[in-house]
Length: 420
Image 1 (tube, rainbow, N blue to C red):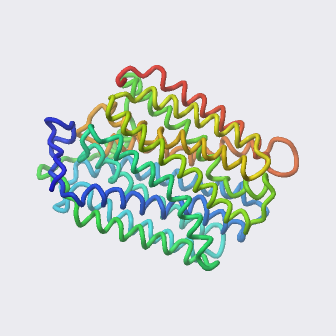
Image 2: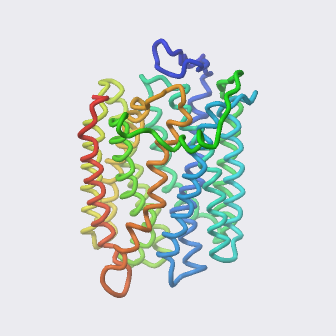
Image 3: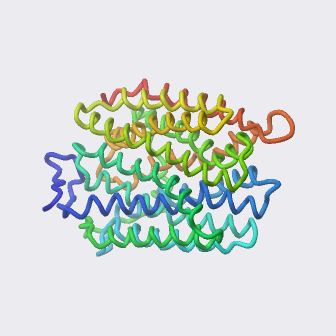
């Protein structure tokens, strides 16, 4: 049994090869493995380590750590996407980056596990993010390379479900494992490598035989898609940037929101974070499956993306007003419902707005910048908002800022004309 990705009826890459039945499960598993490793580290394990290494400045240090990781992933993703597009490696154009990136990310995870101080922890996160950037660049490029447009939103939904599940499973995993950072970082890293090894084994990758030179100026141009010539793509890119920035501000500080704003202890908050993340995923999985199917069936993308952003903003408002864990969890569940629809349909919309589908690595790397840059922008947004008032960090102001940024992201969808 094969997945037919011929360009005549799918708009996949002209060089796409038929895939076996194992390809789709392996692709989703590889994406989930990478998401589990990096998101559990960024949203759970690193905040816990910073509570130990720098308790007095944990919020500010976490923002700086996230920003440095964001810079690294931005620096590597787009150039590697361009190099991948023109690679003549006999293993294929994506497979080396899938496997090599996962190994590099695992190295960074083990540096995080053994870091004796904050600078070493930041260095480990930079290495992990570099590997993650290479791996996810290749995995996302496979959406345009190998996945037919008739099922693309559903495959993107599976990616989104992986992103939604990974924090919940990561929280449960960390709370169940011994209180040793080697377990927190090591087990997700091993699972990531194994999942990507499986995809490496089953993927029938595109193999290019005609070499194409890549200059330094060409690599720099890989960061750029002209927003004047390709306005629809630019608006979709801006929408994703703003919505992701809002969600990053909440997810990055989720542990501290539970401890400092809701008054739970660190031990109670670690367990509660798993429950809250479970609400996020559980609500998101329903809307992800439903609206990805509906979008593929009707061919409509814009109304679902806009509606999902509105629902996300509503969830942020509920979380802002929450004074106990149950109401806070309701707000997070509403956010999950919005993001379940947003992540799947928005990715499908953006792939259909790519100026050049034959250079999927470059195009998907530019798309990736829209959800990588928020890590860099987070300190610019969070630091002044957290500093409002006196005394403890002002997490209420941070949530208000997230609502405003989400609303702006929704408005960016309206001018798009290239998709329905």
